[in-house]
Image 1 (cartoon, rainbow, N blue to C red):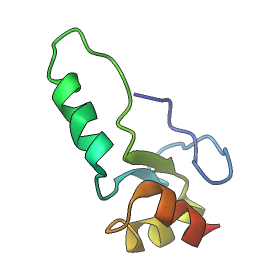
Image 2: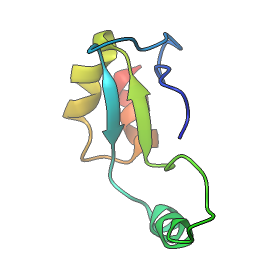
Image 3: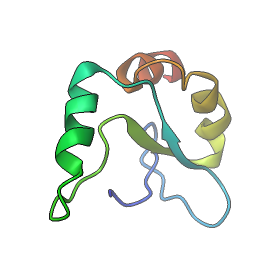
Length: 75
């Protein structure tokens, strides 16, 4: 898992502000999940991103989209 830094503004996320949001999966994300079943696998899901308090609510509105599509709308 990547450290909690906002995917929009690079702000460190502290305390209760912001959080991790999971977005719609692409076929390559489903393959990533399959590989992640290996107990030795380490990584951050390519369909998940951290958002600071300022961007969290807006990002949550777009969680039905893929991460790439959501980022475009949030910016």
